[in-house]
Length: 466
Ligand SMILES: C[S@@+](CC[C@H](N)C(=O)[O-])C[C@H]1O[C@@H](n2cnc3c(N)ncnc32)[C@H](O)[C@@H]1O
Image 1 (cartoon, protein in one colour):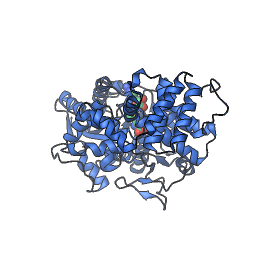
Image 2 (cartoon, rainbow, N blue to C red):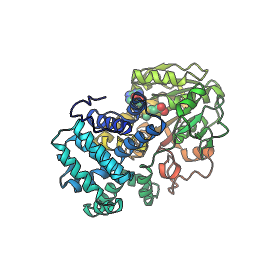
Image 3 (cartoon, helix red, strand yellow):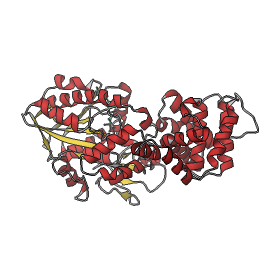
């Protein structure tokens, strides 16, 4: 937490939930912190009750998610580009803007407490400026601000990007990916869905846990359910870790590998990029039930520890190695029957969960990651025995990270590898109601927040033929 004694006027109280939200928002912009990792600890150390914890979460996530839109409003209200505003002051303005425009909190509370934050943490000289900008924001209705931002846009894409608070390059990447399945018209729905808080979703590890009676079964995952309220961590702890918080799409892609075809007891499976181990735990339960063996690998030692913790509730011996996955094919050629490559990616498919992620990623990240993804997929193919299966998975729908990587690997494998119909496998697990778009030629499958209420998980299934 930052030092809040500076410029502190004792008569200016800031509600603890706002203080927590502001602290996390500033750490995200100042230190590149991750809100989803920082916020729970900040809430706990401030001793917030449930209602205030909910408020702090909404303030923090809502502000970070909609920062692009709020910056347009702030720029108009301040009559200057946001790049010319001090970072701490800008954070306080965004937080105030979210309350006035996004949450419709009473103007005086939103303005006074945001100004108090500037007085405490920003520079004294900025107090009048912040007050003026926030008062200007309160003078228009949220609808009037939408019109103002829309009118100031420089193109149709700029307008959509501004109003839905996405970087324009991300919007274009989403459009290309939707167009590849004949569903370009769904772009607005997708962008809106990214701004909705996802419900907490669970997996009951098959064979080890049951869905609670009062839970709402997932639409598609046979092992998934949404909680009936209550503390998710408590539900996980009460189950001894056999119930886990996990996105429904993540469950489906892991099950697609384990259930793509009948398991021959003794099969060897590998999770090549396993940290923090969500899919490893599900695969471990599946391996236990079907008589397969599972190994996991992760590059980062601390994340390998998380994998060990994730699989501890499953009574199966799962060795966890800490290797660069790109070298595993050479070290263990043709050893495994099924390999999951849940590749490091931009995470553009999980923007609902990581509110700041859309502002962190840059187009150049895609090219760097694609290079690693190509090498990891080649390595996985090399580690797979003839007759085996590789699942290539990303939580990004960017075509450069999905179809392009898969097509290039198939080309490089020169006839050794063919793609099987991942959509058919998924429908076998999820039921025929799983709508995977209109392009009948594509063998890979893309899930979407707006259509499936999952993260935008991509999966291709490759059969290693010789
Ligand atoms: C998308 S995450 C995997 C998520 C995981 N399967 C789950 O469901 O919890 C990708 C992981 O790959 C790891 N990684 C990055 N580069 C790697 C490499 N060269 N070899 C192996 N793992 C790597 C990252 O540290 C990260 O933990």
